[in-house]
Amino acid sequence: MSDLIHDDYRLLQVISRFGVSLGFGDQSVAAACKNSGVDASTFLAVVNFVQSEGRMSVDELAEEVSVVELMRYLQRSHSYFVDFRLPSIRRKLIEAIDCSAKNQIAFLILKFYDEYAAEVQRHMEYENTHIHTYVQLLLEGQVPTHHASYSELANQHHDNHSSLSKSSHELKSIIVKYYPSDSDTQRLADTLMDIYIMEEDLFSHCHLEDTLFAAAVHLLEEEVKAKSSDGKAHPVESFRMSPPDPGSEELSEREKEVICLVVRGLSNKEIAEKMFISANTVMTHRRNIARKTQIHSPAGLTIYAIVNGLINLDEVKL
Ligand SMILES: [Fe+2]
Ligand SMILES: [Fe+2]
Image 1 (spheres, helix red, strand yellow):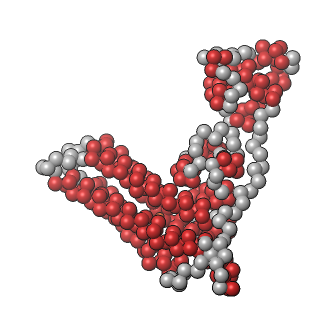
Image 2 (tube, protein in one colour):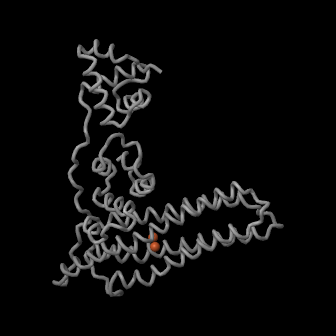
Image 3 (spheres, helix red, strand yellow):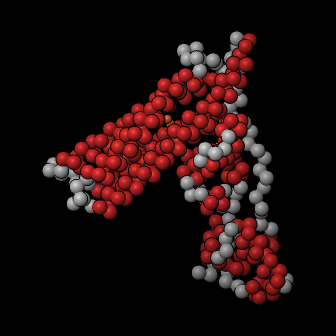
């Protein structure tokens, strides 16, 4: 799991929105997901979707996802944007612009921002209360009668995605082109950067809804329709099973012993003498430890040893 983040830090947001907490040590993706009660197939489908930037076949990925898990992910993303990201940018914006009564432009920019934030909030509330409610009925095995299909419902609403992107574009444009030059330029540039990053993030969220989520819900609709041909509701399996944990490479007892001696400050030669092995074998153990834990420094190994209960803090040579 930690390799994923090192390769692409944008996945930190994916991880947190799935509810997987950091501090997962050397756990594999399957194990970290399992510990957080997250469906690993859905997690990996979203990771692949984000990383491929639309190049992967959505239909193939849709086969892998649990609609329940993906919907939960989207709802968590909504609360991230509405409850955290938009208010935090607003606070920065207020610090960056002069909101005194004399500065009409600053006041108007803040007003524009608030309107934009309200538009995002309305959009996401609609999804939570209408679109996701429709999907929930499908999951319970009911074919909702008030709409012909998810695509009909979503098509009307997802036109709003382009409206959201127009509004954020306009907001950036107004700040860049018209804000008076006597402002706190550094703070304003920093806030603008945040707006750019949020816009990208929001675009990716909307794209996922329009493609991967839509394809997964379409499959669900087909399944429910086929099952309900007898007129009864058949709840749909809410989670596809997580694939079995392939097993992360566990450290052997000897390797753990080597770690304890390294963090106590012993040299390779001293470790070899203490463990009755050759210095070469110590080196091999250390290479394997570095490969398995992705930790190369004694300081890093010290944290590893404490977190994993291999050693007490008072035994460590600081
Ligand atoms: Fe959304
Ligand atoms: Fe949306």
